[in-house]
Image (cartoon, rainbow, N blue to C red):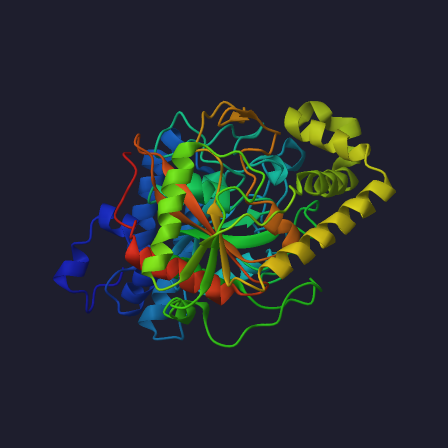
Amino acid sequence: MIQCGVDAEAAALSQHDLAWRPALELAALVRDKQISPVDLTAALLERIEALQAHLNAFCLVTPDVARAAAREAEIAVMKREPLGLLHGVPVSIKDVLYTRGIRTTGGSRLYTELVPEEDHPAVARLRAAGAVILGKTNTAELGHKALTDNPLFGPTRNPWDPARTPGGSSGGAAAAVASGLGPIALGTDGGGSVRIPAAFCGIVGLKPSFGRVPETPGFPGWDHVGHTGPLARTVRDAALVLDAIAGPDDRDRASLPREPGTYLAACDEGIAGLNVAWSPDLGYAAVEDGVLAVAGNAAAEFEALGCHVEVVNPGWESPEAAFSTIVSAQFHAAWGDALSTAEEQMDPTLARFIRRGARVSTREYLQAMAEANAYWREVRAFLERFDLLLTPVTAVPPFAADGRVPREIAGREVSALGWMPFTYPFNLTGQPAASVPAGWTDDGLPIGLQIVGRRHADRTVLAAAAAYEAACPWRDRQPPL
């Protein structure tokens, strides 16, 4: 453990203090030898052990891996070696992301023994940045739905109310971060799977631009719509993670070149003068009144930040049919053979989704792709007028963790994706989008505000999210664990 140069205040940091410090502060304290990576990791492992039975956020905790990495991080500090952006900072990884030498099941009985031989690029880059992996967080099976339960590990609970879902499919990641089980987590977003659990758990979730973070190797099925991004308690922590994981990788020919500057610096860029659209329903969504009130108040705050805010109805039609056709067909291509031999091992909702994909013809798939391209052209034309689009993240607050989704909202019958109408459209377009806490309902449940940027405008999204966080901070609000 680091002893030399540790001041009394730093030495007195309790497990509770360490659990709620942002990653940016923890990294600075490690660099300055004011906290030990070994002590920090031990404190968080102890906290995970205390809360795991209550939340089921992790499906695999790796104490030996974490302690070994923490010792290496501490040696590097003492030797004054060059340190990465996240040196000594504990992180967790969603269980659909490949981790070299660490079991990766995707929440599926089909992969109970899978131990990848290589990391997902974002995982490799977190390791290179000095992060300490605490373990793998729970997910829907193969990430196929926006809830978090699977046949292997069961449901994850929402830290604000354990009777409710944390959303998904990165719900384990969101529950962990919201509960002080590590300052940051890595998740994936194929239709809202970072932003929805971030909203339901009262934290930040960032879906970077499509291609900003490379997406191979890993489980298939999410071509054209899959993104990897951070969940964190502060916007700057999310930006710090993006600085560590963004950049091209030739294994993924859709990956984007590295941008000049840092995403952390973008958080200090002003947003005064930006033209901002607020759409409460995108013209087609049914939304609960309580969600509209909280998210609408958050959107109005952008006027006080110097933006020109306009309430809009974009006039778009819901792209749900195209989205479902594309993803179900891709899931059938990836898992159809497994369905024929191992359906009884699967989550029934996954099996139904794969069977739906079996009914999609080549012509229907190509038509759905054409519809997605037409939708993008409408969105692009709309954003010629606006720098940002604001919406709620979901149409409802967190609901019961019983595996069922709302099918009636604000007195209207809705489709299976009707409760999440604001997220998957921007997986089809590939735009950057963030979820930030907009506020809480009267009974203490988090509501999220979605900030959507123009194509590749990740910096603008982060600047807006950071400006809003400064005006309406949420960092000190913690769930009643």
